[in-house]
Length: 473
Image (cartoon, rainbow, N blue to C red):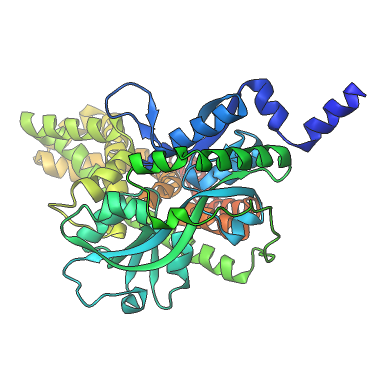
């Protein structure tokens, strides 16, 4: 009988597992920042935030400790389903689509969606005034659904909460729609921005696996105790989040609800093809810049003076020694006050400048492969150094470097997935967007992989053919 009861409890949900472990593991993303969950500015590795305090209060009422698990916000639901943690607690909005996969507790916070625009745009009073304009929001959020439902508005998706307001200040966007919690801390603190309208409302709640029924009931009871004791209000007041909306009576927890069936169809395939065109265009333009830049760097390192050689060497080491993702952030966001680039230009420049350093090394190896005697013979025949380089050395060096350049183009094609951090919707970003829309990663993932393979396989065949044809006899 004891074995049967224990087996039934284990099959029921994770409450017994949480208590046996002695910890309620909650998933969130530190990139969300203040006031949700973030590192204590005073130093150390202590986490602070209103959700940290809520997690501690709930865990205490369950008789366990709270344990934070870092996870990308976009992938919280798949990670929950994998069992990486027990609950999602990170500004996770209750939506009909999410109810198709998870169970929600009673809400612990009610918010509104706010449209923020530049103060100079006095004629903007709602999303209806932004037809044909770019409006930024967070990928996978309720705000994204609000913007997507607005007729004629172009949705621009971001991973972080500060970047859209930076782009709004720089004129890359006409508006930003995000939760009021975010807008008040990252947008409306900027003197050039203002609140234009409230365009929606929603609730934050904890999300659990549907099978965890008794853990859901226990958390609901704990939330009621947290609210009835005044502790929840105290937490929200400390973080300047309490308002009249929070006084509404608590609702019952929301069990999973089967939403409308959504499948990968022709409309999504068209979006993937459009993203593939963006990927190829950015990669091709960036590679042209890299080839020209790398050739220039290698020639200057060979023929330039001491200062020129030192400068080109420093460039190569800097761009090879730092991540391309960091370079994209600096180029697009860091230099925005002095050099405002659109996302596609920044993507081409960022990848091109980075790969120019690698191409320079390929050309350097090719130049060094040409015997010095050929240069000396050309000079003896009356050619200048530049003529000898152009007519004798470079043609042979390029033959040596060409297979490596083709291989680098394949690598650049895949590295182009990084430009999604500066709002470019390329293949990988489209895959993550579609995965959220259709509630599955398998179909979008397979389609994305197939398109990458279709783009890179001919290039790999070309690289191998070049290697065979240009190999020394």
